[in-house]
Image (tube, rainbow, N blue to C red; front, side, top):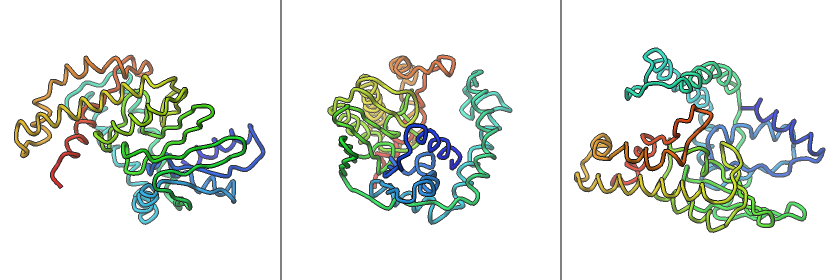
Length: 290
């Protein structure tokens, strides 16, 4: 939100009175791109950078259709209100106390967010790259890379080779894979390239700072396992199998037992953050005939 961007800018100004020269949109999602105009207002000489596909996705989803911003914010409110009323999800999974508290907080903030987005004019990136763009920011090299698709079609990361710090965007979210969209088989390959970079510190798109590559390996293993299971059942059942057919054929309890410990979120009463349904859905969509 613009208000969130203003808070970040206030923090930056506590560190330095120098202007921000570059802003990177790691991908097109609103929570990683809708503050562009706020930064541009605060720092008129700023250059906003993105991978080429990301600029097109920001343009198509927001700039060309600004009314989408409010529509997307409110899109899930009916569903969440229904869950609270019934005490369970549409799939019949009972809500934990942590789920209930989180849903109430989300609903309370929806109208506040919608009000901020109502008259917001999206600001597009003005510098794009396809594969790689290196910046010299004064005694420090910053490597901006597109390693392959994962969460979106244009995920960008930043690597500081001297410090071995990797800024990952939503290719890495802790705990668990953000799997509401994406390309899981390609995501795995992208994660492997990040592991090869051998970072000491990883800044995820959401969650705390991570140390080393252990968590990246866990994400990679998880994505590979889901893709393999979906493909195996899809072709075993013949390629007219629906998503529900595939899910019924997969041992969900075994997957939860295998990966639940990797993505345990203590902030959510210790519940594993697996989002199996989301990852199975995009893995199924990825292998559909095109």
